[in-house]
Image (cartoon, one colour):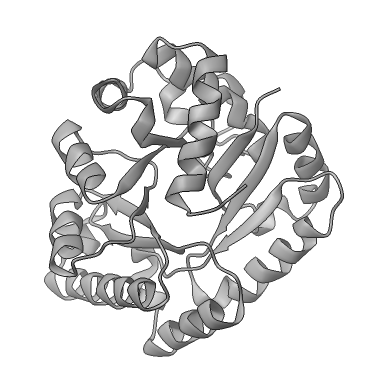
Length: 272
């Protein structure tokens, strides 16, 4: 069985409260040796840490890693105090990264100059924190790739990380790789109609990619139940992401899995 690293999960959210322990055991049985718990609002930081501790106290479960951050989609919830809370967490806890952070103009309201300026301000502040505490970052980018790349260059950000659930084109992918980032591949790769994503992964190759579920979202096609509006994704489904990526790249799972594992360790600067 292959060692797998789920580099982006929201396994701490209430969706998983009823069966988180059982799912953690099942994920480990399927080869998921490690996962990252991602922060997105400061009001959930305590729960994030509590679940992190809970998972790491289990015997046969993936190793959990912390990556707290203030997500651009929730910009209206963030305050300067939250940036202070984030910094305290980076000081007090062994966090592997700052995330997920970035820019998001998917909704028209987020394109409003005032709101987008706020997003840029919080993204910049968190890049500064990541630099100060020598951490990679986990990027959330929706319809804002050029702006994210511009800010990373302005900050001369050198710590790399992962462009989570990458949705840009080949040129944007190459620009982020040049800045030291891996690209996060989700269950979207199991969808043959996700032509842009397949084009990107084939253009950049396995050495620049990592696996993620982004659970409870981005459920692989094979795991979706047509009688539900939304089928919850879980870390248990990560092998399907590996299979979908192997198919897209024309590689065997045996070839691809060790590369994905090592890429995750490199992106998060872990020694295992």
